Image (cartoon, rainbow, N blue to C red; front, side, top):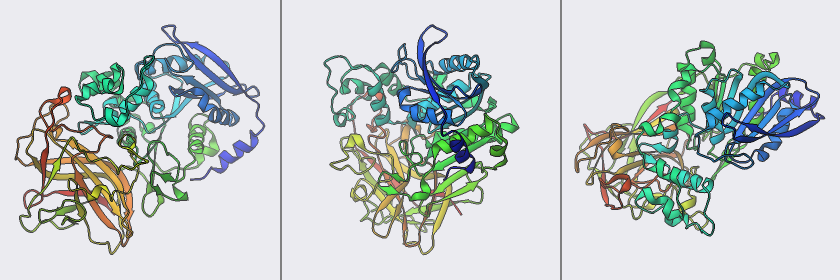
Length: 565
C-alpha cells in the first residue's frame, strides 16, 4: 500500500514548514490538569485538528505530530489523566470520555482551530476515541481507531476465558509498585490459583486487575464501558484498522460492521472503511509478523491512510474526495495479496463444512485425525484428550528465547505443540488445488467431558510441504458458557453438547501442495487463563484433570466451517 500522489504533493509543498510546539496544562471539568502539546505552523492561521490522547507518553508521538502539522493540520497530543506529565490518577478508561470531550471543547475555542477535529491512535489510544465519540462533541468530524474495542468486556474475554497475559501484564505496568518490592517471575505468577489472587502472586495489590478478573460475565460491572449499542447513533466517518492476529480483531471488525450496517444515518454507513491485514497488535503496517514474513505487499503506510482519511473528511479536499475507496480492503494470507470488497464478510463466499474424522486416535500429528468435506459415513469412535491444568498446552511453542510468559499472538510454527498427546490433530489430504476463503471462521463441535467444566481451544492451520504449520485463526470456549455468557451452566459428565467456537475473521489461500489442519486442545495458556475444570469458579484453587472428548458421527457432526470461494 503506497503513499497517494496527493499525500506526496502535500509533503513536498510543506517540506519547509516551520512547526512549533507549545505545551499547555489543560484543566478538565474537575480542575485536574492534563499535559497537552500543540504542534502547529504559525504560517497557517486556521486548520483542522488531529488529536491523540495517550497513556503511553505523548512525547513519543512527536514525529507524527510534526508530519501532520507539515501537512496543513494542527496536531494536539495529550497525556491521559494520571500518566506521564498529566495530573490525577489513572483509573483505566474511567475518565476518558469526559476528558476527551473537555479537550475537544477547548480545541474548538482556539483561534487556530477551523472547527473540525479528527482523532487517531491504537489500542487504549483507539478506545478513548470511541469513548469520546459517544459523548457527542460537536466538532468531532472523523476518527481512525486502530485495533481497539467498543465493549471493554469483549476486549478482555472470549468465550468466557480471560486474556490473562494481556491484562495482568498491562495492569502490572500501569499500577504503582511499592518501594522495595521486586516483581515475581511472570512465568510463576500466571500459574497462580485462585485467579483472583494473581496480583498478590505478581507482588503487590492491583485493584483494577482484581476487579476485571472477578467479573467473568458481562454484567452491570461493565456497563459504563459497553458502548457498542450506542455506535449506530453516531454520525462519523471512521477508518477501522486491525490485523487477523490481533486480540482486538473481532472487536474492530465488529465495530466496522455495526457502523456500516446499523448506523441510522445513511451517509455515515457509506463513510466507513475497514483495512484488515495479516498483523498482530504490535505490527500494524509491517511485513514480518512473529515467524512469518508476508512479503512487501503486506506493508501499509498507516500515516498515509490517516492523512487521506482526514483530507477527505476534515479538509473536505476535493482531490481526495474524488478518489473512490473500497469499504473493505483485506489481505489474503498465503497468496499474499490485497483484495477489495463492499462488506465484511465479503460477498461471493459460501459457508462450507470440513468434517473431523478418525478411528478414535487423533492425538498428535502422528494420530489418525483426518479433515474432509464428507460427513462421517459410520459411527466413528470419539477422540479423547487429557486437559491437565498443571501442564496446560501453551498458546504457542515455548522455547528458551520465548518462555511461557512471552508467548505471542502471531503466526508461529505449531509443529512442537502438535506432537503432544493432549492435542487432537485433523489434517486434510495434500491439496490438489488452492483453497481460498474469507470471512468469519467457526468450529461446530460435539463434545463431552468428565468434569463440571472444561475448555475447547481450536486452531485453523496451514501446513506447508516443508512441515511448517502456520496458525491462521484461533478461538476458545469455556464449557459453562456454551449457551450464555450471562447465565453459565455447568456441564454434566458424559453428556454430549454441541458447541460453537468463534475463530474470528480470516482470509487466506491454502496453496496447492499444502494441507488444511484443525488442532483442538484444552488451553491457550497464558494468552487465556487455564480452566481448573471444577465447579469452584474464579475464587477456587482446586483443579481437576478433564478427559475431554470430541465426537464425530452421524447425528453428532464436528466440523470447521469456512467461507469458501
